[in-house]
Image 1 (cartoon, rainbow, N blue to C red):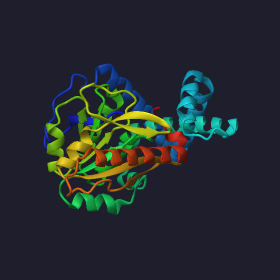
Image 2 (cartoon, rainbow, N blue to C red):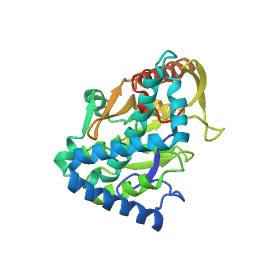
Image 3 (cartoon, rainbow, N blue to C red):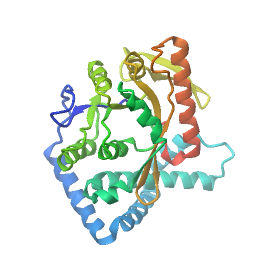
Length: 318
């Protein structure tokens, strides 16, 4: 998985270094604005439920015609499915992946167009007391995310609820996310800013974010290490030994930030929930021994395996 965030989207957010890909081009802005105009029209005509059903149907059509991606998703899901899983069940999960991802993308483009009361009804935090207790300590929270579900949706919704959210993401940030972050800042200037950092920047901004009691979302389950200088640790996942990134976890331990694990799950009707697990460390211990780090990261990997088996349609990267 990639790590997420370093672009401050408002002036009162902790400063972050600019990135050459942080601006949306005119063509990207025109394309996304046109798509939002079209989807907004469908939303007014069909309502949120109707738009959801139409989007599911379009995702199903994509499943039928995009055989290359269909094979890719099948391979991704095969690591989590039992070898005795019937072919029809495997096909169902692949199709569900297409429909879920299409729905997540459409919702991400239009959710700032929804009335506040309807938007609030689209989101649920499971084990919210764990998150609030961690933030009450005042040293920030490291939310260890993964490539299970569409985490970018949750960042905006948590900002809507008043949480101070940040993340670490690949420098190859998609235009749609950069575009919608700017739209979100315009729509809700009084809400806490979303601070995005890019993988490969100096760690200083992360220390500041924890000091300012932000929630920092970062994925350590990368399929490829972005920089050989980054510190990693081996874990076992689905019987394979992989290298996961250690950077944000180490900084969190040194800052005495709480370390939680989170999963973003999509439900019918453009409903989303984020589930928090943990804490995975004792924030006051300051222990960064190899034994502790190995235990935490293996627990992180085991939880990923558990959710991947339960929600194979949510796997986004092998």
